[in-house]
Image (cartoon, rainbow, N blue to C red):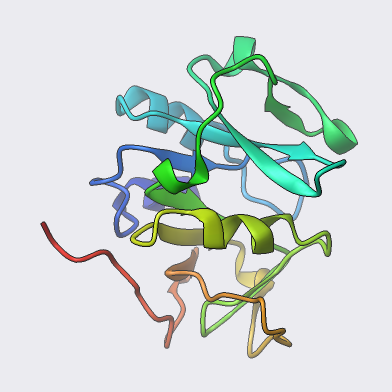
Length: 171
């Protein structure tokens, strides 16, 4: 089960401020157990909220999944805008969504570019992983200059061969 792999993903154990999306589509793994795990681990959970006008993701600290999340863009659960905002540079680990992922760690999103604009704003040492279904694995995705590979991608079959692990230096 993919959820069981989550706490063992590289960089997660050391992360203090992980950012996870709230799943909303059948092609995404169910992140609700992962969100709960982050809170149970005593970490500062951060979740994105779509700001359509600014065409970006705003990040907010979430401490209670039932109280702090409400339907937002496209009916997807998002943090309430009244919660404490979090600077993306404070995020040291992120779980990225996507429709497809390739062996080099590139992802295909939904086309709005929200994560393409968020990833460069994270801390330089931030670790970015994706959990996906085996059917979402593909040989090589088309790439554009703004695309950035993730630190790693794993599915129920394991990590992709060839995925480049970019971990922060050890303290």
